[in-house]
Image (cartoon, rainbow, N blue to C red; front, top):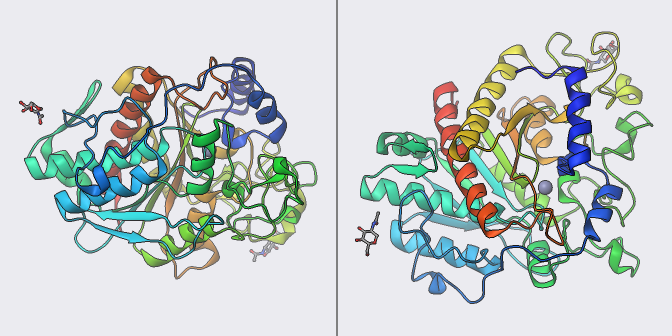
Length: 432
Ligand SMILES: *[C@@H]1O[C@H](CO)[C@@H](O)[C@H](O)[C@H]1NC(C)=O
Ligand SMILES: *[C@@H]1O[C@H](CO)[C@@H](O)[C@H](O)[C@H]1NC(C)=O
Ligand SMILES: [Zn+2]
C-alpha cells in the first residue's frame, strides 16, 4: 500500500497517542519522558556464559532444541556464541579495527556465499533495543544448523524448506550482531534505558551528556547546514545531552567507523539491514525527504536545496524530494514488503512497510549512508538499505524497549522469519 500524506498524518497521530513512536524518527524530548517511567525491567539479562567459552554453540528457535532463552544474551555471549559457531560449523569470524571508547572490539562473522558477501546484517547499534543482537546471532545459528542437518526452519506460522535455507545462505552474509558493546554493557548493567555509545568527550563532565547517537553519526547529510532550518535540529541534535546527538563530525565514533569498514571491505554487499526496536516497521530509503523518481539533480549532494531539504510536506516537483530511480524504488519496496509480510505472518502482529522519511526525516543514519555511497562515489556498490524496527514496546517496563519474555520470543520469530524471507527476496531480485 502506498502511504499518502493524509494517511501518514493519521498514522503519526495514532502512533503518538499509543506511545508506539517509531523511535528512530523521534526527537530527544519524547525519549526523556519515556525514560522516567517507573516499572520493571522486562526480561532478565543473562549471567555467566551459556556458550561455555565457545565450547557449545547457539541454536535458534527455528530449528528445534533452541539454546536456553530464559535470559537476554550478554555482550560477551555474542562473542563466545560466535566462537561456538566457528567450532561447530567452521565459519570465519573477524574483529573490526576500531576499538570502542571503553576498549572493546567488535566480532563479526561471515556465513554462506561462495567467496562474495552480498548481505550485511547489523544489530544493537542502539543499546537499549533489547533482543536485537539475539535476533541476529540466533538467526545465523539456525541457518547453519539447518544447512548441516538438511532441515528446514519454522518461525511461528512461517515455514522454510531446506532448499530455502540453502538459497538464503547462498547470498553470502556478513553479520555484526552487536556493534555498540559499550552502550549495551552499560544498559544491561544499569537498566538505564541507554541508547547511545559511552564516549564522554562532548559531555563536559555531565553524566547526562555522555554518548553519541551512532545512528546520527554516519556521513549522510550529517551537517545541519544541509537541512531546512526548521528541521536542522530535529533530524539530529548538536546538543550532547540529546538522545539524537550527532557527535562532533561524521564518523567521529569507532562504532560507525567499524560499519564503514565493513562496507569498504565487503565491496559486494548489495543489501543492508540495521535492526532496531520498536515500532513494528520495515523502513526503506530515503530517510531524508520524500522519495521522487523523476529529478535526479535533487539529491543530498546538491547544495542548491540545502535550505529546503527535510520538509516532507512540500511538493517534490516544485520544491525538494530525494531522488531514487524507479527501478531501485521498486526493488527496495519489493524486498521490504516480503520482509514485513513474513514478520506479520509469523506471529500475526502487523508490521508496516514504509519509506523512512514519511515519519521523521533524519540525518546521518546508517541506512541512508549505506544507500548513498554509490551516489557519492559511483565506483562503490549500490546497497539497498533498511531500518527494521521489531516489536511494539513494553508499556509496563521502566524502559519500553525492554521486552517481556513473551515479547522477546515473538520478536525473535518475527525478525528471523523476516530475515530469511529477505534473503530469498534479495536472491530473487539480484545480488550483483
Ligand atoms: C531435540 O533433543 C531431543 C533429545 O535430545 C532429541 O530426541 C531430538 O531429536 C532433538 N530434536 C532436534 C530437532 O534436534
Ligand atoms: C543542483 O540543482 C540545480 C537547480 O536545479 C541545478 O541547476 C544543478 O545542475 C544541480 N547540480 C547538480 C550537480 O546536479
Ligand atoms: Zn534504534
